[in-house]
Image (cartoon, rainbow, N blue to C red; front, top):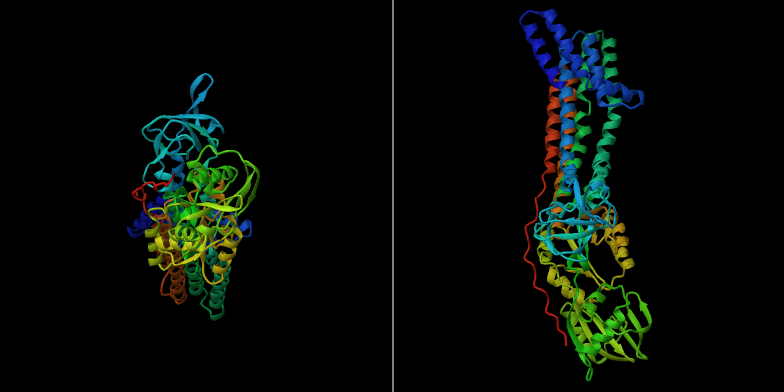
Length: 616
């Protein structure tokens, strides 16, 4: 319709210029109808709901111009405004298209194992616990766990990390990932309609409708501005009646009506937020509201949980120290027997070295400290040096902690039997990511349950100068509250175990949320990957978006401030004001779409060698 309005407008003016006035007027009237049809019905519907908008201002201005006999000007106004509306709709559609394209990563059908054999079914019909048969080169239809086969998967379109991930039985795979060289059997952990990928798209679409600080600022200015403009225009026309020149001042009132309308202001923030949040989702960052996006761009402090965020979350036994006369195998045996009853992450490292420990009785776990029990009638304990004394091995305990290890003390019948040093290696990109954040002026802090010596060693390795050691979940939340009192603070954790701290932060960020709807739901921002380079990338992206929003708001307000006096004193006519306004709106839209530019997939990192395990 805007194209038809423009074509008719050009034909109408040509006819008038060549002397066919009546024909030109008729064609211009048709152009007016074509252009006005794109916004007048909507303006009337909004008015019936007692809502005033920019479309109403344009409707009144066009109607007034017609009543004054300026059909050409009214047609030009309708055409230019309809073009601006069409560009706005196209910009919004373009910003959303990239997000919706994520759903195309899921295949339309999948091969499922049934009693009668392999059957191809629509992806939407997949149910939890179905066994998917995924051949090399095929995409995974929904989230699941590998039950058979080994291969590498490419989840770069979802996580933003380019390096293929080796998977085997017990490993999780996300919807949309591409299977590499081998065939896999995968047990579905989500149905075909509601998996991590659809959750990401749903949350981001909801986020695009949730307004942040700048969007609310634009609304606070734009909403009252429409009725104010109507009142001002009426006063201008009334002034003309009082001084005896009603025609001139009525014309100026119509021009003022258009000049002061907040066209560009209304679109200044939404197009930027939609573009930026959609772009972030394509490189593995799910931002759940416009407010979270703006807060992320304003953070000046980032607090990291250590385990699984700064580290690989694959703790390994790297040292065993024993008291005089005690065998290493005995120390490991006792520790494994007790840790088999523990849910602590470090228990897996010990059980990996001693997978078949003896049975213990009377097991009592003291969360955050250790675990005790009875082995062959002898009381045994394992735990942190704060709970179980290192005794004669105290100096070795200090040395291991200073070397960045978490130390487990093993006590047999009230006597220290040995120490087990466990290290969760830092991610290879950790130091570079922290350095990049520091270069951006962001203060970094590490929160960990480790003792001060271990925390100090790890913080030094990664380049963090401020750390808080011996932090339980409640302590971490309190530390975040304290940090927030002086600075905008983001907290980065796993999205589940760190829920109190994430909730306490200005921006809670869940790391490695692929395949876990719960992790995605638990924070303001969720990273589907685990690469720490996503953090400075996301902060820089959000900062850029905030700058674009601010620039758009300033430009939109400047246009109104400049055009108002020019319209009031007759310097610009109706067509000129409309043209300037719509050019400004096009600039604002184009500027907002710049926020859609996001960095592509992160380059692969060198994989660290497995730590050498010191075993007996």
